[in-house]
Length: 267
Image (cartoon, rainbow, N blue to C red):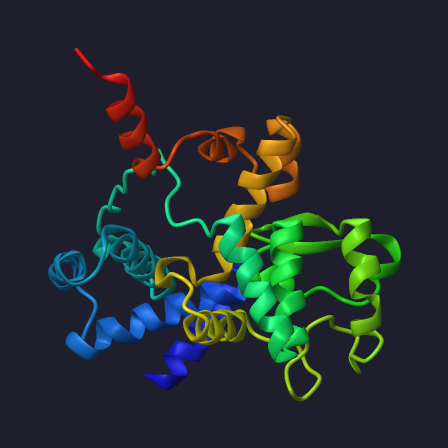
């Protein structure tokens, strides 16, 4: 089975799937074979139901997509199951507030944790994903931008001039061509970014639901639209192909919607 998984990994790489997607698909196949001995339509249908009972719909849907790709890989497309339809969000929840963000930075600065301090500032100041953050190289400090292969396309990350000036003294001490290398000077993993955010956020009492790297990407979008209403520009900065994806940042959260309806409905 190990050999087959490595072959599947190579297959996914050839399909130009991202490293995080490859790892996710491999974990899904491993989960399948812990429960089933072979790939069959009956087993795939049972796997789908099992995933829906065990995980949230989005996670279950991703795992079924992974197994459908695996069915194609082994030449058994007849075993594939219908994809799980997941209702798209109409509101944006669990975004770190500007007050929480500033408090987080103040705590990190007080503790002398410059690395995580600037990791968070770069995510919140550029809207980059954790997978993009770990790929940023020192050359972007000279040009103010870096082009990366992300989500199946080339995406340009723009670095604000003020952030470059503020962080220059820190990066002079970093002995790697990456901005945020691991302890060995090599490229850090997105999981490492998540773990550091979670660890120190908990230590400082930040809300658990906003302790993930994507929260700073969301905050970037929310803050950008408060100061600049150019939705098309934000879509470009976020790397969204469809402006409707970006439009979610114009909508109120569920909590804010409740406040508005309580204030408005008096009949």
